[in-house]
Length: 127
Image (cartoon, rainbow, N blue to C red; front, top):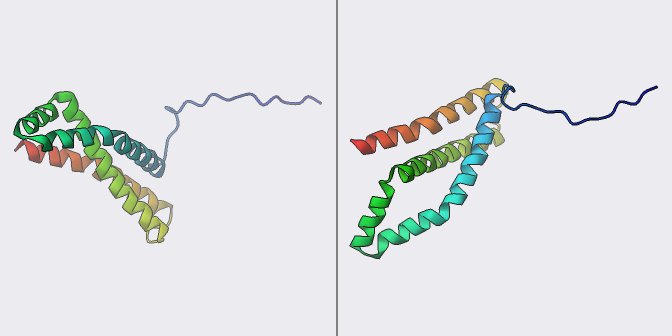
């Protein structure tokens, strides 16, 4: 009798079809990490804006840079998604959202609103 060797298996994550709940969960974790990593820069920017009028103008000019604007857009996505997903997880814990269908639907709504809110805010700020 031969013993099968347990060899490591290569799993291609790009070929796996994740359910909406898994996508929302992964994005929730990414959003939380992005918010934590962003704190030093946000504190610096806030401190710079409060020093005097000229430093406020330089902070405003810094936030107008395309890369910083993209970063702030991603941060707004992280805040909105993390907030909405947190409310969703709270409702799941209270068993208000129960069942596979309701969980998948609420995860899809959270993901869509998490993307839609920053788009609306940034388009509103351009007006």
